[in-house]
Each structure stands twice: as C-alpha cells, then as structure tokens.
Length: 69
Length: 203
Image 1 (cartoon, rainbow over the protein chains, first blue to last red):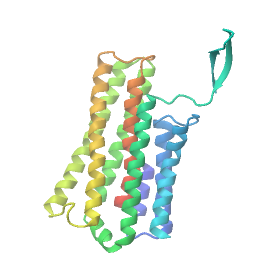
Image 2: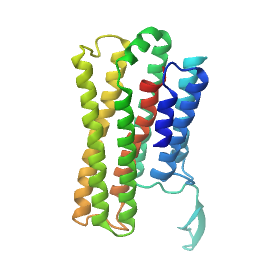
Image 3: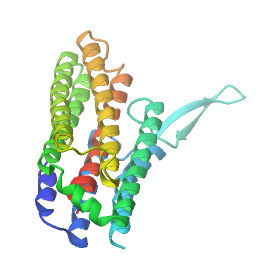
C-alpha cells in the first residue's frame, strides 16, 4: 500500500520518462508481491508460474517503450 | 522437485522426478487466468499505443478522471487480496469458520471498490461523458468496465466459497476449489495493479 501511495504522489503533475519508469518499476514490484505471495507462485517450477512472473515486467516495459521511444 | 513412482513393464515402480510442481488450485483455472491476463495486456498495450497517437485527447480525458478514487480502489483490492490469502491460510490450518470470516471481510473490501467505481461512472456520466465521446473514453470505459465485470464475478466466487466454508465444505485436504477461486481473485487484483498507473497515473 505504501508503494501504491508513493507512486501516486510521484505522479503529481506531468511525468518525465524517468518518473514514469519509476512508477512502472513500483508497479512491477507490487505485481511481484501478488504473484509470489498471494498467488503462491514463488519458487514453483511450472511454465504457467513463470509466465505469471513475467507478466507485469513485460507489460510495464511495453508500455514504457510505446510511450517514450 | 517431487518424485512419483511409475509402473514399468516388469511391474516394478521406478522413481522419477516431476518436472513441474503443482500450482495452487486447478490447472484449468490457471489456464483461464493466463488467458484473461493476456487479454488485458493486449488492451493495455492498445490503450498506450492509441495514447501515443492522440496525446492531446488522452491528456484532456485523463483530467476528467478521479485519481484519488483510483487510489482508494487500489487499496480496496489489495486489502481484499490479502484477506483472501488469509482465508486460504486459515483453511489450511483447519479453521474453516475463521477462513469464512476472512472471505466475508474480503467481500466487504471488494464492495468498496464496486461502490467507488460506480460513483466514478456516475460522475463521468453526469458530466456528459461516455464511451462514444472519443478514443480515450471509449478505451477507459471498455477496459474498466471489463475489469469491473471480473471483479463482480470474483465477488460471486468469494460468496460461494464463504458459504461452503461456513458449511465445512473445504478442509486441509479439500482446498482445490478454494485455492482456485482465490487465484482468480488475485488475478483481478493483479490486473488492477497495472490498470491504475496506465489509465490514471501516467500522463
């Protein structure tokens, strides 16, 4: 929750690519917490588990690339 | 790594190793989850691509949104997910009634999300905005509306699971349905974790 509030406060006003990148990194961290701890996929050897672990980073990177490159 | 015995032609079991560890819940539910998150990923990418083509329309559209409402929704869904996880843990400890109470609490948190989201839609509708206005609002209402449907469906699962827990339907050795429903709920939360910054925060 602190990560969410921190990212929200960072975004006040218009965003530079670096701030947007930081917000997306915070999003990846939150996603990883959900996947590893809530979904209990941390450390499991399964292709679907690997896919879920890659989901947030892939989407975040795609979004950043489309917006700023 | 876990091992399993396999019968051979000679009738003796041979130890071998399973390459993949089982996931919590049913495999079919996980395949559905993967399909859903892929669909939302395509929507997020499409939204971002449209924004790169129409930056002024998207910037103006974002000014009409309520980021504080989005923040409240994020906290509500994160809380609900944590409560659902506690319910799964309680069931594993053979405390089904406690697990039921955790799921009821999760439902209450999810209800906050639904109320706030309906309030948002009411505010936008009251300002005369709809998905027919421009690309931004079409994308916004479609993505958030689709997600809201998933939240409502997830709440239905939580309701059914809480009822089954109350009747003692789950247990330490009978948690497949509970874990499947919990995994679906965490998917809904995971999608919102991405949706909130992409639609509300990043400008």
